[in-house]
Length: 368
Image 1 (cartoon, rainbow, N blue to C red):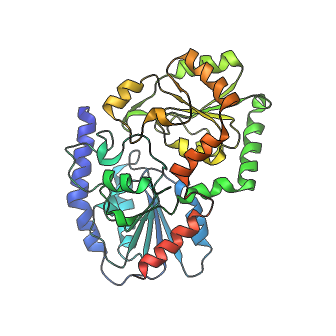
Image 2: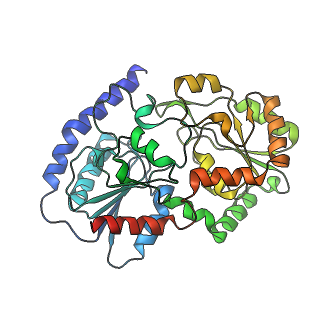
Image 3: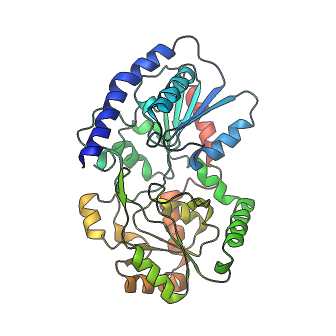
């Protein structure tokens, strides 16, 4: 870990263990405001995709009042951060419901009031690469503080995910519920998919009639020092076959082009990824995928997996030639039953009705 990253982690520890608890204490007087709902995120400046379905659903209810707090902590000024924290804590101190979908220190740093219910919607599904406290890239060993603290409910995509999520993120197992991931409901909308296809092919008419390959790799390293491998090889493999390649790198590495990854699923014929959990959203479409991992041995040694990487129903490619052959094989020969079985294991609770189940789960837990 570089010195710059260590300094950032130490600054986060100071913020979490000293400053934020004091701010919450000063702002948490008075009564809980019934019906006050907060949506908050520290990685985006607008509502993240992972919370939009839930937000739209709750916005229709007349008994609720929604307040939103979004700010990319990694790119904002100190003055903007301070203003955000003050505004958030004033609302958080009396909120009845809070929704987040990623790490969010302003919640995890405080011992919140019993009348406030916090739901972690999370932003990934299934089980693949190690995360949370199981990975130094996510939480350094020297870090002091509960990175995932303060939640009453953590929603996951299938029963197999519950024990791993509870262990890796230090959650009570009873707080982790396999009721589905809210954002995945949108993938079942015919109107959404038709709109995504129309928008993509209107912007890229040269892709019409061609096999569309979506390359969505995870980033190596950490959020402050990310990198990818294999870009030149996938470009060559697709060019040789005449396939149309869409490159979607992690937001840390690629400027916003107006086409978020989730809007491209409807237009793509096959997904190429390495260790990204984007695979599990893709499974909803029951289309083939390829694992392209030139640095598999290194990644497995340094980070590791929760499941056998070679157990997935696909071809694992490490070179341009292997990737070219893998694309042809998976497009032409993959048994749909293999993809269905994989979906059932990792995504069984993501059936288009996850948001309803989450709302019911929150209501039931609040009444206990």
